Image 1 (spheres, helix red, strand yellow):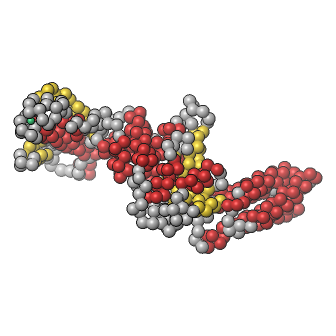
Image 2 (image 1 turned 120 degrees about the horizontal axis):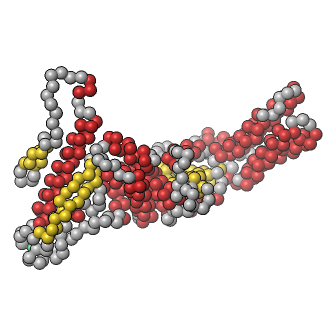
Image 3 (image 1 turned 180 degrees about the vertical axis):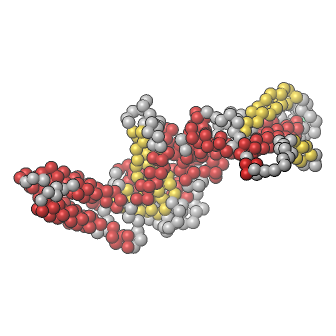
Length: 453
Ligand SMILES: [Zn+2]
């Protein structure tokens, strides 16, 4: 039984359901089953929403000025989708009061408390789940545990998620730069790009997604992500995040990237304080790994070959060591020297193809290192001093943020806009700010039903 108590003490009792007394129990009979729990929740919700609506309508029918009742115009019906089922309510509309002082228009009390077809919480949870799981699976999981009744279509889940994403972005762009955060001594900004498969009707097979991970010293990492082609005032949004973490015009920022223009310039533009660019060790190490890997397949038929292969592997290790210590010039010399001697080997002796391959990869490495020479640092010392050197963590964030959700199924393809807005919700969920951000961004909502006076 459900007891509904009004302010004046009036009690209304509603029946939620009933079980039968039995002589003995089996393990399956102890406690509520999921189905029973869902049913009780749904019934409670229905009675509660209907009672609240009726109460609100009764209050609103009374004119605040003359205490007379407004005449009834008509009674419509409304359905409210909530996490605990869809509830149908009666929605009376009232004509203006005869005193003609307060509201002169038709008054629709239900529209005031139900400005949308669903409760805000329903929308928020749907968006959150839609951002964490493929839309279809999100719907399945929600309806497994909640008495949703007839579950929403996949399209509704998608649309709600993207609407919430759009509102979060508008708020992020419009929000005043808050300076209430504790000032950060320094900021590390790791920016990396990833690629998402585009839906067929869009140009290109893939499109770019940027993922930034921001930290101030130890502590928690904050994630930011957007599709540059779709982002509205991307730099401003990222700067807002930095401000929120306490960055000011004097806070030094270390920007770790793979050296590509997009991430670098975004970091540069978004940082309010002085910046220091560093080629992240993760990307550099990956590039060294290419020739190192190729050298492993060096022929080992003869003792000479084995010796040559061993020497080559050692040389590449030496190149890695020099780069790790920030010795750009010396590493370039060694790369050049090694590549040249391999090319000479390729001219006349047996392991021609292996030598050619390693030489080619070394030349690639050379191009990369000389292109990024200005942002290669002494990683060994930096690490000893506890300075940031690698975005390997970002790499796993990219993996989690993008690929887990966006390439979860082979066939999953995205519109750049859909991906962008979904990422707004997903990053808020990861940063654990979704509940707050959602509430704040409400001012950008265009609810189908507007609040009456
Ligand atoms: Zn009146």
